[in-house]
Each structure stands twice: as C-alpha cells, then as structure tokens.
Length: 492
Image 1 (cartoon, helix red, strand yellow):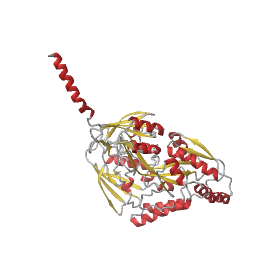
Image 2 (tube, helix red, strand yellow):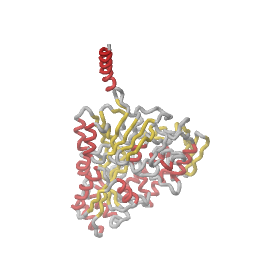
Image 3 (cartoon, helix red, strand yellow):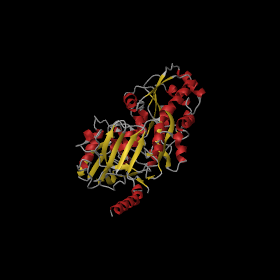
Image 4 (cartoon, helix red, strand yellow):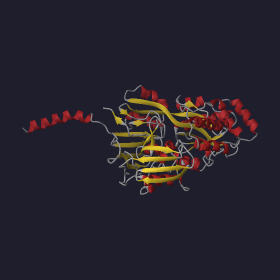
C-alpha cells in the first residue's frame, strides 16, 4: 500500500508539472542602459528617472497615452474658462498614496506651488511659470488660474515633472518614492536594479504584473547577451541596433521599432568663445554628414532633422537644407569668422549614439580644420559637469521630452541661448489658443534656432526595442520618456 501511494503521488506530481510550467507569468525584468540618479522626477532632469517612475510609481493630473494623446490621470475630467486662462480639474475619489495617506486637492496645490516656487529645483520649471494661483475648491476640485490663457495646460500637466506628491513624503522621494501609481517601490540596489511591486490598494485597474525589475546594463554587448540568455525579458530602448536583425530572425523575440520625441543634437556652448560666433557654429553644422551618423552610429535607424522638433509632429518644418553637409562651405565660414578655433572639448555621455557618433563627428570636424578632445563621461558626471556646470564646448545628447523647443527660451539652459526675440515668440505662443496661430509661431521658432545654428541638429532618435515574443502591451512609440508597465502582460 505504501509503495502504491508513493507511486500515485509521483504520477500526480508529474501530471501537475506541466501545469506549473505553463502557469501565467506575472513578473518582468526590463533592461535599461542608464541608471536614474534618483527617483524623484520633480527634482532631476535625467530621462531615466521618468522611464522607471512615469505612470508606474507616480501619476499626474493628466497623462500621455502611447499615441501621445493627453488622457485623464488623477483628474477624471477638466474644463477651461476665459479661453484657457482658468482650468478646473475634478479629481478621482478614493486615491491614496503608497504610504496610506489620502491624495486630494490640497496635495495638488502643494505640488504645483512647490514646482513654481522661487527655490524650485524642477528641471521643467517653465511648465508652471504661467500659473498665477492654485486653489482647492473642495477636496476633489482644483482650480488653476493662469497669468495668460494657455490652451496647452493639460498637456503640460501630463509631463513626468508634474506628477502629484504628498507633503508628508516628498522629502524622501529621491530614494524612497511614494506616489499613487499601480506599482509601489520595492528596493534599489544601486548600480544594478530597481524593483517595483504591485500596489494592492491602487484606485484604478490593477496591473497584470505582480513585480517589475528594472535592470541597468550600460554596455551594448552585455545587453545583447542578457536578452539572448533570458536574463532580461525586454529592453524597450535597446542600445545595440546592429544586432536587431539577429532578434528579428529568432521567433523567441519581437523587435519593436517606433519613434521617440528625442531630438539628437550636437549641442554647443553658445556663450563659450569661439562658439559665441554664429559663423563658427554654422561651420560646425555644415561639417557634419547626418546620414553617415545615422548609418554609422544607429545602423540605419533614425530620421535626419534640421531643427529641434519632432518630424512626426504636424507643425514640423524640414530645415535640414540650412545645414546640409558641405565641407567647403564649412571652411569658407571659418575663414569669414576670422577667429582662431582652439581644440574643442567634446564631452560624450554613455549612450551608444553619443559615443559612436562622437568619433564620426570628430573626424568630420578634423577634415575642416577643427580639432576636438573627446572625453567619455559617466551619466552622473555628464549631468554635473555639462548640464549643470556648463563646463563643455560640444556634447551629443538626445532631448527626449515632448514639445521641448521651449528650452531655447531659457538663457541659463546648458547651451545658453535665450535670444530675446526667441523668448518673445514663445511668450506669444503661451498666450495663443488659436490652432493656426500656434502652428505659425511654432514654425517661426523652429526656423529661428535653425538659422542661428544654436546647435547642430542630427537625427530623431528611433525607438528600437526588443522583447520576449510573449510580452504584450509595451509602447511602440515613446511620446514621453517612460517605460509604462501598466498595460503589460505575458501571453499564454
């Protein structure tokens, strides 16, 4: 009898084994090339912060959908008065922060007042500069009065920099983030990974994933190996496009190619001689072969751009001809400038497009008589030295925030432009509601920075992603820096 019982138990165990093997998977490991410097998107500029936190940990009044549309977030509805000068947001009921405290109108007032305060460290402080007052009409109603009408205000509130935070927890959000999202913070092993777990008290539809791990792999070769070995389930912004054909040929994987909001530029320090001379900047722009960069640094993926604006936007103006590859014109402009160009410091952050592109650009500049000194910086070092310290001549970076041409109106921004005439255009844009008039102003803005050669405009960063073929729901395009896992699941 004992032997028969053991045998029966063994048979049952074997029968159960396939069921366990094919049980629905509800955890995911996501690869990222850059590690966020902190986990508070309201006090840091790095896109990696939002890639981990946007929609997963933190939520705003509104949010971006995968198609770039503005959708309800913590506000279920909103309406405007006086042609967009007054905005009233109706908040959802029953929303709590991860620490159990209630999210209500007072938290919205706190968040927006903090973002626009004189001592605010918000990287996109201009999003809030037009606010005159924020009032809690009742616990679930917020009224925002602007200095001038702004029909784009709900769009501004969808940015990762505008997520709602509680005064009880905001001080610790850099390392212990407390939001309202469908995932809660688990652990952060610095240099390795961030782990999130499903929020059992989430106000909305529960995520299909119980746990998500963001794994940081900076080396493209290591990223390829991790995907092939199954150590990483998905790499939504995959850093080694040269290996995409191998994944396309392997039925275990899906390759997801889309667009981003990432304008990749050779940024120039406009206050640093001789780069304060527009002819020198123009000479640098004409020395660069955009297609060579796309082929050599991105293996054919990418769209040439001639200004700081996404080509898929309906108001985009193709200005690539203003800075077409023309080495002889570049040399002539340098002669006209009449200045000696010293060896320029080319600071390169870690992404492969920057490191590979930097070598190609340095060679092209050498051909027209401009020498460069390349320094490869780690991400935190780039943020401190280049972005904050403005201690550079040239750098290569993708600006991945949506509709961010307004950074050119900020004279203290790292490339230091802020031309008064450009600021005037952006001021008129902020006060304009009419769609046709806004389109015209956006086209004027694009043209002015292209004609001033503020930076050398290279290409629109593509979104090249790789994932296990069973994973569904990842964004194809990237209308904002985000790895939104709220709608991701494993197909059986």
